[in-house]
Every structure is written in C-alpha cells, then in structure tokens.
Length: 378
Image (cartoon, rainbow, N blue to C red; front, side, top):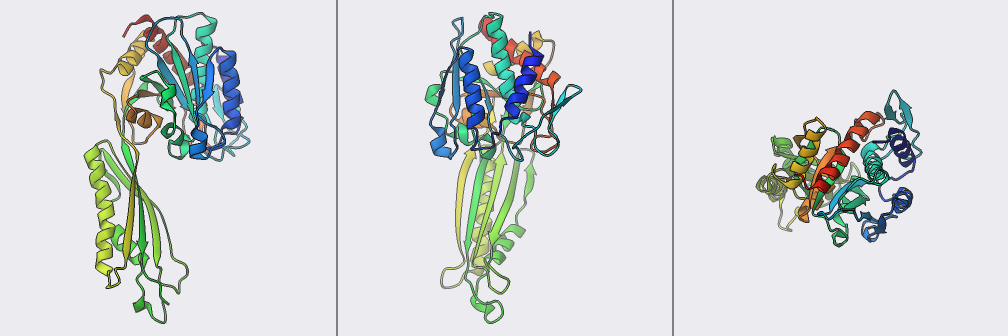
C-alpha cells in the first residue's frame, strides 16, 4: 500500500527546501499545507521566541476513527550544514546529494515517511487511533525545539520518533548529558618584562586537563572537553580561559561523578597556583542537557512495535546509543518515545544517503504499529 513514487517525490521536495537550524519556516509552511489538506488540525507553539528560530514546533492532530489511546509520531525539521541549495540525486534506488551538501535525510526521511503513512491510512479508510504529529525545530543544535515544546498541546503519552539508522531496531536506552563550562581567571603581565607578576590561566587549564581521563570512561560513560579559548598575544601572560565540555552516561550517579571530577580538577589546579589576591579563580557552570532514557522491555511502546514487526515477518532489536535525541526530552516529561530508524547513513556529511527500500520498510512498520494499536492488539 505504500506509494513509493509519492513518498520519494515528497522526500525530494522537502529535502530541497532549505531548513538549517533556526531557519525552518519554509519547510514548516509546506508541511502545514500538506497536513491541513489531509484533514489534520495544525498549530504552532511559541518555541521560536525562546530558541531564536524563525519558526516554532508544528503540532498536527488526526482525530482517528476508533476510540483508542492517542499515539504520537515525530521527527525534526532542521538540518545541519552545509544544507543550502541541496540538489538531490536518485540512482539505483538510493538518494544522495550532489556531493557539495548534506542530503537532509536526517531527518526529512522521517517527515516523508510519516506523511506517507497518514496518506495510506486515509485513502484506504483504515481504522486508526488518534494520531498526533510533532515536527520539532532546532534539534541539531541541542534539542532546543523539544526542550521548549508546549507539551500541553499533546494528549498522547507514548509514541515514536523517527531519527535513527537501523530499520530493524528501536532505541530503548540513551545517555543523559551535562554541559560543562569552566572559566579561569588569572592575571595578565608582560611575558618578557615581569612574567612573575602574572598568573597564566592557560597553565592552570593545562594542569587540570593533564590529570583528567577523557573519552570513554566505561561502557556507560563518556566525557569530552571540546573547546578552549583564551589568551591575547604571545607577550602577555593569559589572564582568562574558557573551556566547554560535556559528560554523558546511562547511569545518573556516574554522570554526576564524572562531572564532579572534571569540575574539581580545575578547582584543584587553581589552588596550586593561588596567591594572596585569591587568583586564579574558577567559575564552573554545569547544566543538565538531557536526562537518560531507559524504556523497559515490557513497556507498551516496545511491545506494540515488536508485535507490528512480527506481523511483518521481521524482528525489532532493542538498541543502546551514545547520543541524545528529542526522545530524551520527551522522557523527562513523562512521555515515552521509542526511536525508530529510517535507513539514513553517513549523516552530517556530504556522503549522506538513504535507500527508498529502507524508507518503505519504516513506513510499513509505522503503518502496522498504528493498525495494531487501533485493533487493541498489544
């Protein structure tokens, strides 16, 4: 029942609409027109005012034709760069860009798949539950759309986000993450005339970093210091350094422990160089970026997806990933989202591609999930 030609054409059309993070308006308006024509009620929340985008999150609702618990389907509208003036190539069943830009299957494959599923349901008069479609903004720059989504617009408490690769997997575990910002205040001095009067913020930073274990801490935990900025000139003792990093873990206690270890390393290093003036001084800001997700195997979202997969003659393996997604934010609001794959590969690179057969496989799975849910068969 999946109309491959229609889905392919719609995917191509959506991909060729520029929608870098904070510039999603054009693709959102195209989606609004499509969904409205399909009979959905569509509205936007006020996220754009909070994230600095030219567009807010799109929330569309289909009433369904049976009495069942509402379910949501979601994807994000923004893409990474280089993502302007994308020219789509389709050869041997595979979509690619012309090699000068990303393709945008992350996550416009999700948008095209979800729209195709709803088209199939409506044109074939298939029984279906109330469906809420959530298309978010600014996912690629910190899940900002999801973080500022007006959840009062949602009635559903579980659903699926299409934002992964494996078409025969469902993400059930993802780490929580903390953002870490360290500011080191030293004292400037001429590096040739009187270096002993200065306190090098770079030296303090180096001392702290040299004692840290970064990268993979254990199977559940990672950390990284990603940027460091400081100094003015080679003949000036640097008086300021700012470092940005992160910690991630599937275990909340481990996340706290590794975060504290990083922060304390800078405080300890500063103490080694401290003078009577109280310098060097450390300012540390820790912000929880998103909480970890851990969906139990017996949760209805997992059981429902697995039942649908069995009906299609495939298995659906539980996946543990190291990155965050809108699902982490939803989970923090008490809303469970299993993350499904669409087949996209080499995302965030100019080599990105996706096969239409993989998009079809995901569309068939999502369609079957809605049919099984409508039938009350868990």
